[in-house]
Length: 338
Image (cartoon, rainbow, N blue to C red):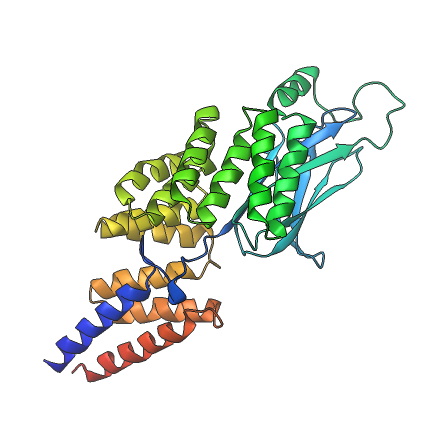
């Protein structure tokens, strides 16, 4: 009888701290979602072939954290990032390096526009290793006007300065200059989402997808919005589409796991949590959710292992203290078993 009561206590306590959809973390604040940087490289004096361009994600101290190849029309993406400050650097043969500072501390999704200038423009045409004229036309068709990009950059700067109203004005100006600027709508939507302005965020994110229905992060962002509103049934198809388009987008798998868990579809939730972990082993919060699922299956030893993984990865996390208590409670339960 004593073991049954203790198990019930553990289950209840962990449900409170497992970060399911619609549940807030300590202090009444929503859990911070992983960071993401979406970017595009613009070429002055030619167009480099995608295979010749390397984009690096660096810490402020110059340490290389990730690197990316261009995806299609000079686009790149970094996902699953800590919410801190970064430097994005692009390199290509025949071009001077381009850098952009990106701050994810206030907003989970940011954009980075990098312009590569040819080292010399004395010789007509593109430098060695560059692509065809068709590539130039394709790139230019997707590029927003310079004024719109400048407004987007000003909006990002306003976000970094903790001036959300100014940021909104700049993003709206970018859209006014270039009404098909789906990236500006996406930025506006994620800003509203961080402010918990749900209707405004939904409208902006939907508009972004109306303009570009092939943008997987847009589906993930809208799905995350519905998760945070406690609408997992609406989030699920959006997140499923996102992971179908980009199977290695671990943050979308994480959000999809939360949508399934909120609908009590535990096997599906566990599969996507595990996929998120396999794709990004250093993301700690997934271990709380995997531990909670294990506990619901009465697999105490597995639950303890997952909670300990969380503590190993994030010993100073705001949830570390309650998770340590859960580990201690599980140890008592295991010790009481015959």
